[in-house]
Amino acid sequence: MTQLNSHFYVAIMAGGIGSRFWPHSRTDNPKQFLDILNTGKTLLQWTYERFAQFIPKENIFVVTHHQYSNKVSDQLPELPVANIVNEPSRKNTAPCVAYISHKIHKQDPLANIICAPADHLIMDGPAFTNACLNALLFVQKNSALLTLGIKPTRPDTGYGYIQFEPQHVADNVYQVKTFTEKPNLELAKTFIQSGDFLWNAGIFVWNVKTILAAFKQYLPEIDELFEQATPALNTPQEKEAIEKVYPQCTNISIDYGIMEKASNVYVIPSNFGWSDLGTWASAYENLEKDYLGNAVQGKNVVVIDATKCMVRVPNEKLVLLQGLDEFIVIDTNDVLLICKKENEQQIKEYVGEIKRNKGEKFL
Image 1: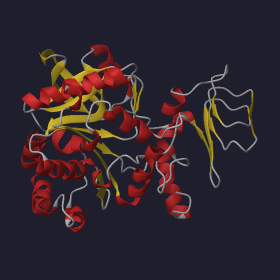
Image 2 (image 1 turned 135 degrees about the horizontal axis):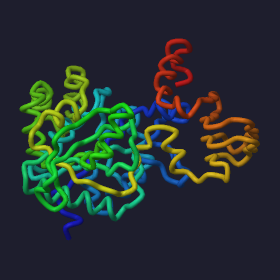
Image 3 (image 1 turned 30 degrees about the horizontal axis):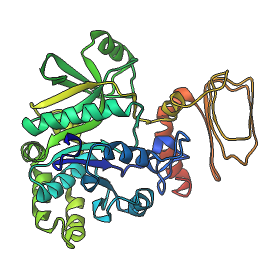
């Protein structure tokens, strides 16, 4: 069965802090380990289950910060402990990809790998499976760095954009022309009108030899560090070797370090009900709302003359909301956040302000 090809792998990246979901997401319990949408499963659990449909379970790896290793084990009890790959520090996505690529290459030089975030929402599982399998089969035969692009539904300034060539090179596979980081609204509108731009979902697919060749060409310092550690990979000495390597790695994203520089970059335009769940407003978009457009999570919330609010409070707390329009209201045991929805991109900055003024107690 193609679905369970033994050379297909996935690396689920689950090391982030998710500070835009503060105060629900905390440093010791970030958003990938939370049930943001009240579904009964965490974002990490949903991600694992999606990939387990078509990737052999022994080929599913979770790359995370070492402080979350036990959380991953608790939430994914069927994942072998050896498949939890612990980063000693946060160095962005390029060192993370280099680490897992060298590790898998040592185990299987014919591997084809999907690298995907742990905290995205995907509504159409079968469409996602089809896009991933199409991508894996393409990179298996071609020296390609491939990404899944999302057909945009609005001129969103919170996403990066991918422009692609008009002629496909294989079934629904197109060469990438340009990457653009988060544009302003006018530019985003232009992108949407042109029809040849996609949202960058940050889901990457490649053959392990292709990505390692790209590291050698574009990020040789990072590649050399992991080459030094390779003899220890998949042995009891791995932890010690990686702890020596990581502090020397540049803090750089795979997008900026390789994807924006390489010439063999391709995209599959996709439509599988995707959201990166990056902010409270994106959670609001995906939750049920009352007749006034309020998305309320909490059993004892009374709403009077309030519209289009995102509200999450403990079930045991009575909260009366009056007169607010388009606000985010998040209450936890020790923090209350009340913030205009239009300012939600600044929550990350507010968290920095709290760290400076109040220390890390509330983070």
